Each structure stands twice: as structure tokens, then as C-alpha cells.
Length: 305
Image (cartoon, rainbow, N blue to C red; front, side, top):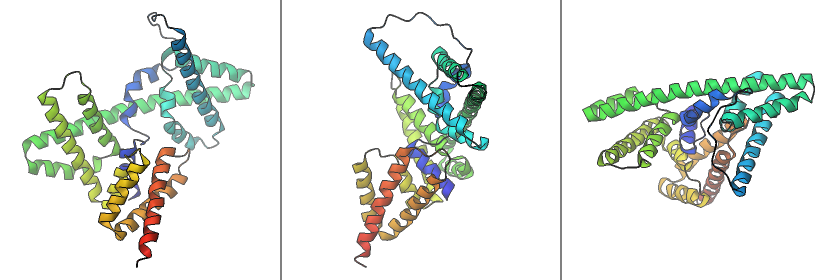
């Protein structure tokens, strides 16, 4: 149940740690090295405002990565380091090309002035970060290929017959993950953002949406409606909209449904506390908002019983 809940929450909140979402960074990540300086063509002249914006962006990158290095050096148990790095994969991925190499070089040089011990620990941590990034990209590429093959199998089954589709969905249920749902969504966005939309691409988007719905149904069939609804609520960024949808669901489903969902939110919040390195603040906030509204609803309905 906990695994399924996390899958649904992650699918709609986009916070699953290991996903193919960062695959486009694989070239830059592989190039990261304190000694790497890529050759590039001379850029066009920049005005003062553009220069300030670039400098501010580089400073933010440097500060975020420096903070990550400091936190990594402070980790006493090496087994906890991968979780910390996974939670900060966007910080690592932002270190692209020669600018990233310069940031790393600067941090290493600063560590020299803090003594040999600090310098050695900093170098070891940075090497660990770069190795993690390499492994992450390789795993992301494998996941991307796996999801492409699975999506292709489902599309082919849809072309065959409804029975073939049903059989495949049942057989592949264990392979349906938050990463696979995001892969489908990514394919939809890629087609929608294409320079030219054709009747064929429109039909493909419709097909992908049908598959997306079926995957969600298969995941939700074993978890109960409350878990599925909770996962869907994670997709709302606006608090008022989230609460509006939740209230509408409570009106239709009633108290028993609220009790079931309340158990899920409490379980999720307790689980977040045990995650080393923390959980995305936005995710915790959304679940907390839902939990508080459920508490209020149960208190209100209890007065009439």
C-alpha cells in the first residue's frame, strides 16, 4: 500500500527521485569534471542586463552546489549520501559544460585554504557526486528505453483488439510506475509542442491519453479509490482549486471515504518524516492541506452522528 501510494503521489507531483525526467542532461553530466573545459564558438555580444542575469544565475548555481557539497561532507553515514544526492539531482544537472567545471574548480581551490583534511574530503565528495551523476544518467537511459518498449507494446495491443489490450494491461501491471506515467505525459507534450500538428499526431495524443487513463486505473484498482484520488489531488498547484476538488469528492463519497483517505494522509506524513534528506516541501504542504481539511470534515460530520 505504501509503495502504491508513493507511486501515485509521485506521478502527479513529479517528485519521484529516480526517473527519466533528467535524461536530456546526460551529455552535460558526463562532461562534468574539475579539469574539463569545453571549446565553444564565440557567443554574440551581450548587453549589461544580460550579463547581470547570467552572473546572477551562475552565482545561484555555485551557492546551491556549494551547499550540496557541504551537506555531503557532513554526512556521517555513507549509505545516506545517495538519497541526499538524488534529492538534489537538479542542482547537479545544472552544472553544465565549462561553467560547471569552473564552479567545481573554485570549490576545490577554496577547500585547499581550509587545510589538507578538508581539501581531501571535498575532493572525495565531489568525485562521489560526479560518479552518482554518471550512474543516474545511465539508469535514466535504461528506464527511458524500458518505458518506450512498454508503451510500444501497449499501442500494438490496442491496434490488435480490446481483449489483447486487456490481457496486456493485466500482464504488465507490475511495470506501471510513476516514471512510466511521466514518460507518457512527456510524449504527449512532445507531440503537442511540435512545430506542426497533423491529424495523425492528434490521434496519437488521444491514444496516449487513453493509455494513461488505463494505467492509472490499473494502479488504482489495487489501492482503492481514496488512494487514487489522493494521487490525483497532488496534481493541483492552486490550494483553492485543490480544496474545491476535495470538497466535491467528500460531498459525493461521504464520511467512510474521508476516513480512508485520512489514514492515507497520516501514513504519508509519517513516512515523509523518516526520509533522510527530507521530502519536497511542496509535496509535504499539499498532503498537509488535504490532511487538515479531512480532519475538519470528519469533525464536522461527527457532530451530526
